[in-house]
Length: 103
Image 1 (cartoon, one colour):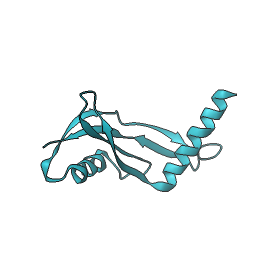
Image 2 (cartoon, rainbow, N blue to C red):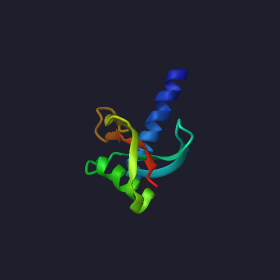
Image 3 (spheres, helix red, strand yellow):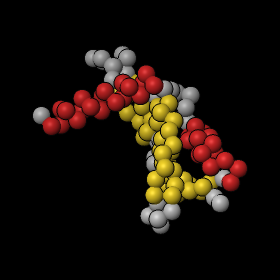
Image 4 (tube, helix red, strand yellow):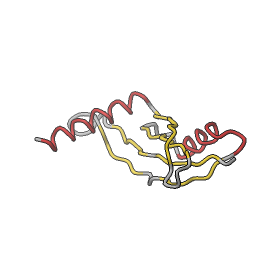
């Protein structure tokens, strides 16, 4: 039963991402060194989105100082939502990275 709830939650999140397009967010976080950094999430289902969206958001977040990429996830995707046969399914790409702004 617990696995079924998790699958339903993932399907609902996938469907939400489908309607939202690209979840292009930047959230302040702390790095292992104690410095502040930013977690950039640019996951989405739009076929035209790419890592460029993450790099663009990182540039907007840090401005003219620039940034260093601390870590970057792989570009995984899976079909989420839809109906029997996957007629209305969406290929959700999970893209996120952690950056540190240069000073």
